[in-house]
Length: 620
Image (cartoon, rainbow, N blue to C red; front, side, top):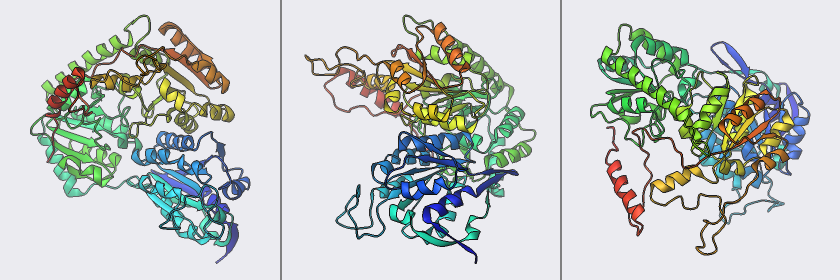
């Protein structure tokens, strides 16, 4: 067998360059490049190897966690058909990526992590940044990636790459098992050479399959759908990842079955589609939650039924409700004692279109759906135009962005009150225009993920929405966007602290304790003094962004138009009234309240909590 002598790192990069995926006859290189920061644990290995492959793009980030967020945002925007690898040095550079690893795995997004590791040869131990363990010499900080990775390995010899890399690709390209793959790379092994077989570096195409449903389970599902009177489809992220939106449109037009959307599934249908009820669950719309409450059959497509989707198991109140779940991931397919249809969403919806020919919901149900949708559009318009003074409410900011954004522009957020309000109020017009990370709801995801989304489709304008608390956690990737010439429009909402948790705190009787950006009051000893003065505009400008500071909704719209016309990253800082909130629309989220307290507000909140909790259900 013909071989080539390469270092472990050189072989790794050469292998990644030649991995392709194919679905529906379309072929793509799986890796768009590598993100990271170099230190003593990877500069002589991966860093050196990348110098020999200038066609494999390297992007320098400012924080290793942000690198993983960029990769996740990119993979999500590309429907998991492409991703980035992420590299770090050993020690804190590696552990900085743990949060990003958890995010990617929870959201089932393919990301390859290549953290440096301690020496495989132990004669020089303990080396810099080594975690010594009295019970083993085979533990490093990289072991903490194990519970947040779908596949984990440590490459202690150069030849181990030969068997490890195909396993890593198997997981990364699996629609059911994908998530974070971590290959820990001891720094000495990265630089060691081996005679690798040349065949390892030939182009390899990984076929992304569309598994069909088991015939018996599909027949059971069809029978149950035909017997239903008030069916409801819950469209999850799997609809978009499978590129099944056309089939969903056709099925709903044919049958009239309405659709509620999860955070990941929003945009599966355009908001004005006759079957689209919008968001469902704890952050849901009134029509979706009303229909969910009375549904006798829930058809989950590509959803994992998070507590927000099910409103902590209170959304589906029909005593006879049944479930059909279409999902490639078997654990999700079996949830809620459903008829499990473990199959591809696109292929299965296409089969249901044929199998349900002639089935339709009745005229009364259609009329109810139409009336609820009409009333909801009026409510959305009202919230878009509150004209609240002196500061606007957050819903007015959403309305202003929606007015300025084109139908294929992207709105992106992850944490705080923005995801809930956007889930209800954003009028999505196409798939992948609503980008929400709500599996982990990670503060600091937004700006780096915006870079990933823009890299995935440079033609789209990307509006990145961050709260002031989130912005302060991770603004530095603005510099990465400037360095790479990537255009983002970043909207910083200044509501003087952690507004979302402040509202949640108030709802459990704790009055927003510890959530405002205030000085410590010398009399009370609490953080209830004068408001902190934070110049977000000056901070963003110092990183190279052009900054706009509007003082009204009208000037905010003008600022957005100005930012959109620029070719470089812009930051728009807008102040809002944190007490102006969007209603809950007959839904609930289970947040425990202290069972014992001397505070009357907490006692009242506990009484209300116990009442609401009685609505939670088991589906057996």
